[in-house]
Image 1 (cartoon, rainbow, N blue to C red):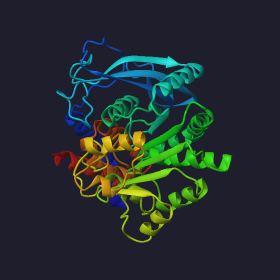
Image 2: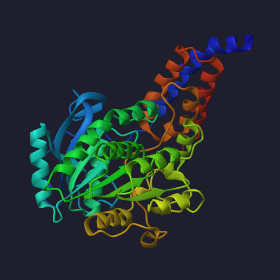
Image 3: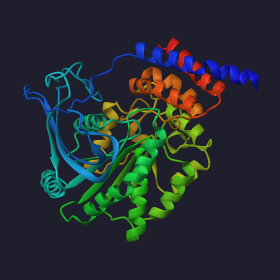
Image 4: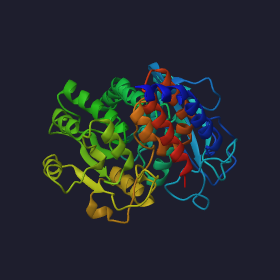
Amino acid sequence: MGRRNNAGGCCVQRVLLCALVFVLTGCGGHPKDVLTPVADTSPKSTKVNLLIMTTRSRSAVPGEMFNGERALTPAFADITVSIPPESVRKKGEVSWPKRLPSNPATDFATLKADDLNIDEAKRWLSASVRKSPDHSVLVFVHGFNNRFEDSVYRFAQIVQDSSVHSAPVLVTWPSRGSLLAYGYDRESTNYTRNALETLFQYLARDPEVKEVSILAHSMGNWLALESLRQMAIRNGRLPAKFKNVMLAAPDVDVDVFSQQIVDIGKQHPQFTLFVSRDDRALAVSRRVWGNVSRLGAIDPEQSPYKEELEINKINVIDLTKVKEGDRLHHSKFAESPEIVRLIGSRISEGQTLTDNTVGLGDHILDATVGSAAAAGHAVGLILTAPVAVVDQNSRHNYADHLAALASNGQPARTAATACEAGRRAQNCRP
């Protein structure tokens, strides 16, 4: 006990030292708050127009539009993103500006960012659906650790690279955009369930909408599945026009998923599951959630998963051997031109997504990075320290979480261990 008290005497100094190391040595990254519209100065660039539905709070920061806090009611927006030509951008890549204002000739750039009320949002959707050859809608639900602008630019990239002709609707929920805000982000998905179900119910009732596809990533899969489950229970089943649900690297408990599928019922959309057994983010999430496997990291050829997937007629694409995406192997599905195009073909032409058509060399779509423990939790900070090296938002927030850990009465040795983990991660950065 005496040694523990001695450690407590120097813990604050260690926390402050670690904070200084992270702040001073963190790397740059792209500019934030990129949603201030610029002039359309690049006629060769492609324009992607998105309808946004969000439960985020309005931001007072110019160029941010919405922050990571929770709003009392959903809001809507009409955003147009300019995407530079393929001569200066690799497919699967979001070309973030190196400085502001963005240059539409070389960068993703915002050309329009208008607020809409609900009636204006309905008119936007109606006009866009009428332009779609099959009167279809694609709903994208992003994952954990996403700022508003991250989700906007990533979805614009997906729409462009997939050549999908559906009306694109982005559902963005209150994520604080930090790897250390895992607990807050998870509860924000629960907070958004009713709003997403309301959107689904509207699409189901709209006679102009003939087909709905849903693409979700990481923690966004929990939100999508829960909203579909609520809708199926409320209505007795899901509407036949809900054709495709694509689950990319789902951060969902496998046992809970089994129950969700039962609750959704036998008349369900075609589910396609993208898995990767080397997904480090989902490995961390598994430890956080009591060592229960996450759906996006299972081996689909092993029992009991193989049998359950076959019974529920769920297509699976195993991306384990694909070496694409971020360092956590959590973003393989967003950065491959082949996979994104395949997704577009599935939506537009009704092709089946399976390993037989994808093959080993293909890859898929991105929106976020990994899963870590709730902010302020000592074990979570130790696990997250290596991640903070590659994520600038984590570096900015790491010191605050360490300080909170010490002030909340955590054992000094534990706090010091978290601090040491952060220091070692920074020293070992590639």
